[in-house]
Length: 257
Image 1 (cartoon, one colour):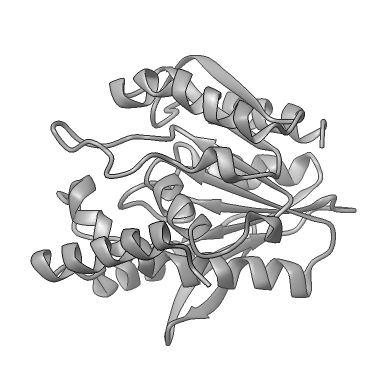
Image 2 (cartoon, one colour):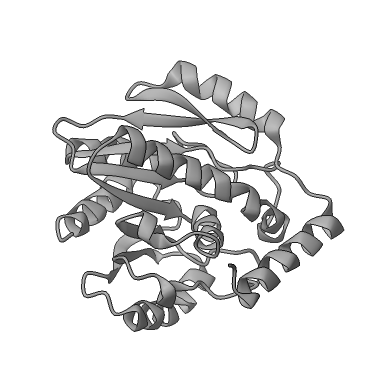
């Protein structure tokens, strides 16, 4: 049974969604999928289903895989986004990890953090579908990697499902919001018992940098000895021209699991 705090959180999202009358932009999502599928160079398009909707994922298989990394992109992007997501989903394969990069709910390009809040519950069944696909059809560990708004969506999922369904969690640029739009609730990192890697850029968004000590404190409260926090020097939030460096940081941490 969901706790009172969880129920209160999702009731608040429900009220927020009514007040904003906001739903994901399925037409934009379809346009992006049509463009992406024809342009995929590494991996195969896999359409998963959640809440009656089929959504694009890209599965890329490694030789003798150690497991599968599920990748959640940031706000308004797609599962083959060139700056952070494509380097991760292709690069991790080279180090022995299957990758499943998932299309998350999107809005129009101008949408802000508060516009996306009502979409977080919509992301939950997509995350569940990706984990189920990884567990049922693939072997080895399942790692959840989430960038920016994808991390917000992953934290909404942790309120409804146990993180024991995965073997580790990697958050990239956690806490990114917009000007005068602070987070509505703290990340429950202290409740996550699997290993956590908190990655952020040296030149990340101010909110991400400001919250780094608190994120580390919560991670340490969870008391998993394999958890860590890493700063990527010279990078900014979107890891433009730093995708390979980001991938190397994650590869090195995955070796400790």
